[in-house]
Length: 193
Image (tube, rainbow, N blue to C red):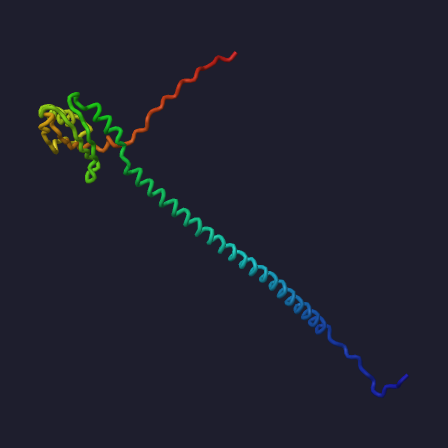
């Protein structure tokens, strides 16, 4: 054994220093652990945000494409609705003329006035001026007619007939489309046994 010339004193570290050192090590490990945890969570959140941005770009592209298709459809709807609103049902006018024409009058021409959509020019032939006046008065008496007047007249010297044109201005209701009424046959009830 070796002899020591100076006795060595065992230095004792105070308990508080040891406890503080251990607490410091735990705090450092906790900070490092929380840093790693938040780093990983932040990285996953950044990836999710990037994925949502990518999907939102795809959605924006799809929305833009669908908007274009919707706009095309909207234009078509607008075109057809304007056509439908401007549509005139002339069958009611022909029915009116057929029902309100005197037997000695013969119509051979029919023209819609482009400047006034409710005006119709009807050309015909007859044998006397009196019959023309009667026809005009028949038209004037009807509630669907706003105005009826003689607009042109020519006398055919060969046949003795009078060619004329009557301008009739109708109320807009005559041009309205009325769907036909389809009667449904009644079903026979069979008594149950």
